[in-house]
Image 1 (cartoon, rainbow, N blue to C red):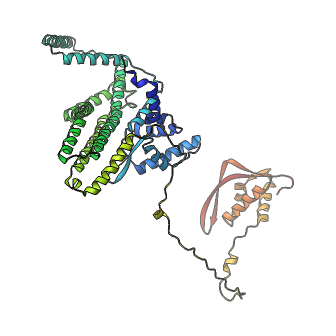
Image 2: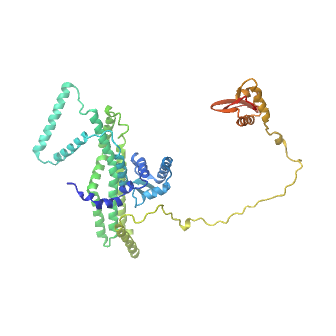
Image 3: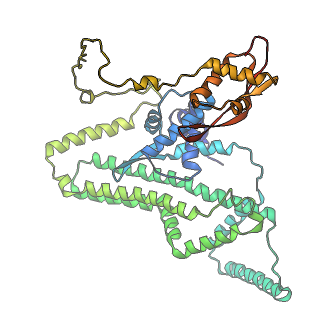
Length: 486
């Protein structure tokens, strides 16, 4: 019978109030957070992402979402700091080699993957999973049975099957495939799902190790006895972490994965699987080519957590640390002990909600006072000039377009035709003043009711200016003969 203590009303009520995954699902901005986490962490299978990269990615993501749904109340930095807060627990912010990184927490990944699982699946394989259940049960029975007769019977049966298959191949020279296309696809998708689930499990394993680390730290902080007993307890706690079920399982996985023979075998197997004709349609969307590298990265993150635990243990047993002045050490110890006790007795549920994050402005962050600068204006007396100095050549070099002349040019072309284009007018009366004269024709056409601009047609007008040939492209303008016009 399953254990029903995890599905009582009291347990589910506490879970709804305190679990980070449930908190994400019922948040007002759950679509924003879940979609961003899925895009940044889940799909590319990434772990730690540098803070600046996260800010830029979230900024672009919010911009794309705002174009569809409207604006969001907070800035990308506020969202990241809020999601990394312990009251939310969706992101973990940590420092590594002088830089700060964000990583997705195990509860947040569970919530996102549960949302992904709601999508209707076109293909659901059951036969391969049934065989997996049978094979696992048979393996348990077979590998735990110490009866020699049973073991010999199993091995002889396997030998007979192998011998029969060898005889069939020698007689026919053919190898009959044991799986059809549906079975191949079903087993590949199950392998892909299991391989991806292993990556998700690593976040929870790492979080469990980190929780054990915090327990060790809390025990050391509240320790009041001698150094020998302290060392004994620290090393026993370290052994408990490594010898726990989760620790032994992880170390077995790490040793199995890091064998060069296993890695070569995995790469060769994946290469053969991806070249299977029955998997050509699904292998591109569910590729496992990089799964070995992704497993190593995820396992290395767990190893780094264990290394941090060892470093903290060494710090606690350091001679310099234990030789601090007694009064200061006891004061710090009392503060840390009360902090640990307070953490264990924190009130359950939400006791205060704020619509916005408070912003703290420290006094030393304020700018120093700077007196305003006064602008001084000089107002010299104006005197009348006598044109005895300077040059007035620029006055006579100005371009003046005679609009009446332009109107006469158009009217002259309209005497023989009902309508004429600007290009045809310029063929008879070329531009003499360059773009200024062309602009005059445009202004003339915009003010006349009998002139139209063709939006779908362009005219290429070539003219000469200062010995150079120039090209102007503009909408085609059509002048028409009308009463009172031109």
